[in-house]
Image 1 (cartoon, helix red, strand yellow):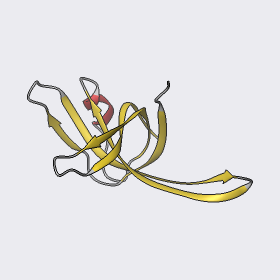
Image 2 (cartoon, rainbow, N blue to C red; image 1 turned 60 degrees about the vertical axis):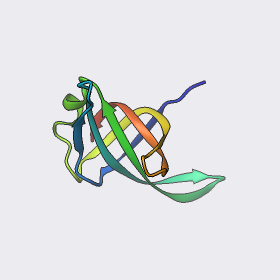
Image 3 (spheres, one colour; image 1 turned 120 degrees about the vertical axis):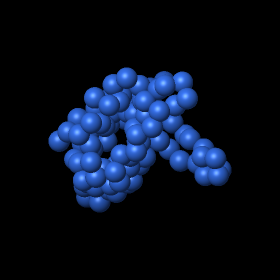
Image 4 (spheres, rainbow, N blue to C red; image 1 turned 135 degrees about the vertical axis):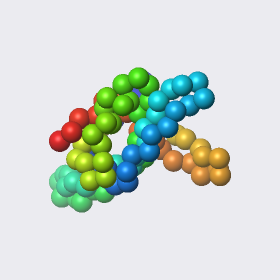
Length: 100
């Protein structure tokens, strides 16, 4: 099975950087995507907002210039994540971020 996703859009909230107790760097932010696609021969407006996280040594390299409003393309895998308060969401775990 394959789990790969590529999504372009705008960073909608300032990135939040943190470090795990084991010393792993993390950067989290929200990406907003808007586009027009063809579906069943008809033009359709598409919109989504998705949380993105990038972890590890290269996270600072990929996110050092990210600010709210940055236009980027993100690729990685998606995973279901449940927060401490019990809310669940689909999260894009990035392994590559490119400025547009």
